[in-house]
Image 1 (cartoon, one colour):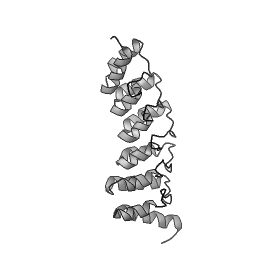
Image 2 (cartoon, rainbow, N blue to C red):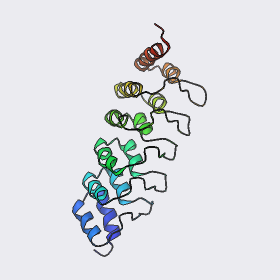
Image 3 (tube, rainbow, N blue to C red):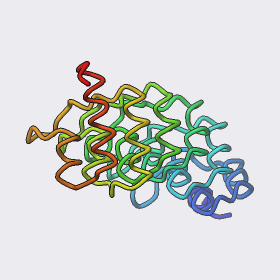
Image 4 (cartoon, rainbow, N blue to C red):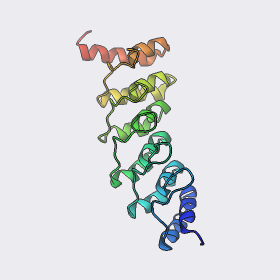
Length: 204
């Protein structure tokens, strides 16, 4: 093994824990970087390489290491929707307030992409479900605006509301999640949000 750093980065991409362990033994830098400035743990998170991620976390890898696109191992889990990777990274103390290049915390891309199980799990952490990204969208707004209105996004809307998401937060143009749902003809989500509006205002 002529280049332990390269071997570690490659091991992270294919979930080869044995090669990763050997590379570390031979002096690989735990925070080595590839051509995109990604660390082994960030690569492992991106590829859902669970065994390598466990190994790296045990050795103290940084869950907040940032690459050239402002991604971190933790933020990547919101894109992949991997609950297993989330559970591996949580003990490492990731910064839940860290934002991606769009200014969003991990629950926002997860809500957009319909990762129901991930959203259900991440709202049990200290993640801010009402965080507003650079586009002016919360996780709830992304679930409606960028979602398709089908069952996964319906369930995500329910989960977010139960976790304290504020349905009155509008986008930069002043359009609320309910108004977006109506415009997109997402009937089921419109019903869910209408019920939430009635509940919050005491109306029947």
